[in-house]
Length: 237
Image 1: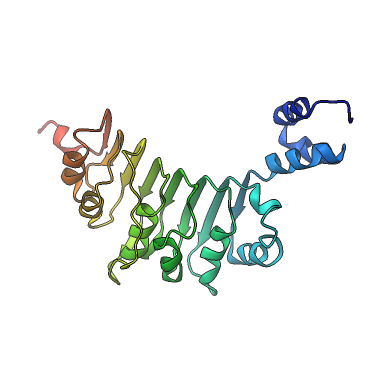
Image 2: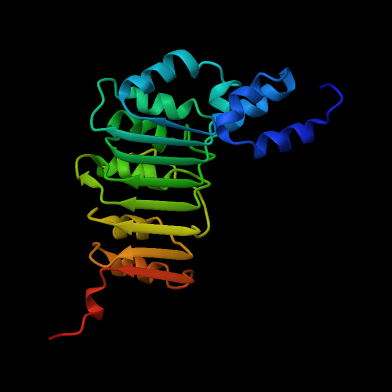
């Protein structure tokens, strides 16, 4: 095994099915790290107990498993018994590039770390769907990640409580590669226009409030536009 170049080992591991990665990690020491990296590239949290176990038992090793994760999916956590777990879990993932949150509550306790830019520096893709949170939490999530390139915000239930944090870090960035907005988040267009969040590819629900502000804001940057539920194209009876 010592005579095989590491590049060849990595190529083999990149091309085996995921079901074989456990066996690959047992071949030799030089196979283990690459096998673990690929096996743990994406993880999912389906309830708060899993997040708690991660923060308690795994996340302490910053150079181990937590550094392998590139994509995290969080599903179906409508409330948190320990709200600080949300930001602790995200803060432990130093290599995270994609974050998907579905049908989950974003606790206000995470607002400070998010708005101060304490995590999320590597996130390039953010998908938020069917969330429940305050307006301040949603604004912080969508504006604070400095390297964000693709943003989906769809069918989120946002309540107006609380002002925007005074220490909100708004990174300097060019247009997003993709911005997809749908459902009802009152004031979205106003907020994104205020902070000049534009996109070269724009997909909007035509019933989305403030849609005209986003269209005007992105008029000089957008090269691809999609409108869903475009009532103004309907032919009258």
